[in-house]
Length: 115
Length: 116
Image 1 (spheres, rainbow over the protein chains, first blue to last red):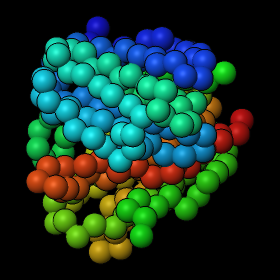
Image 2: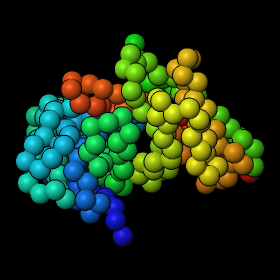
Image 3: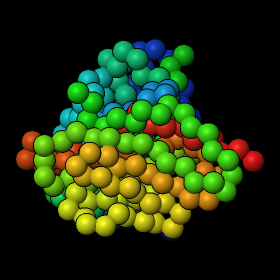
């Protein structure tokens, strides 16, 4: 089955710790994205990557870091510099066409709670 | 100004009836795409339907149709014959040109409750 997987589903972190959220896709998509969703709100873009070994900051990149060493994988690290990391994190991928038609498909999400 | 506006925080509909979820957008880009996603309580965002700015006809996908009124900059989602499983959050999104590339912007969402 083709799709996007995220792990873990739930993650608990102590203040001051870095944590890494996993995102893997087998859709052969070039582009991948990380979004943050807070209760009752829409999605905000953290980072995106159009191609392997390249990524760009989104609207709320501070306190986060990413890597894109493989086409299939786009892990997100939430660092201790992120002031309010408790949120629902969604990973997405798309073909990566530089057109208005490029559709993003999402993984099941990771719910991060800082204790 | 908000790029994507969903004015209905919550909507109720009786099972088997149709419901319209509102979405208005703001862009000066002549080429843009409009998307609707469904987010059940499990959290995953499910792609429902797409409408391109140059498409002459309204998009349809099964029980979902998009009422595209370009002059009014609205892209309302119509769900026909509502089912209990349609209860979820619904997000409208727009993909437009930005910084030499493209960017997708999401609205705040509308929570739909389907009553038996």
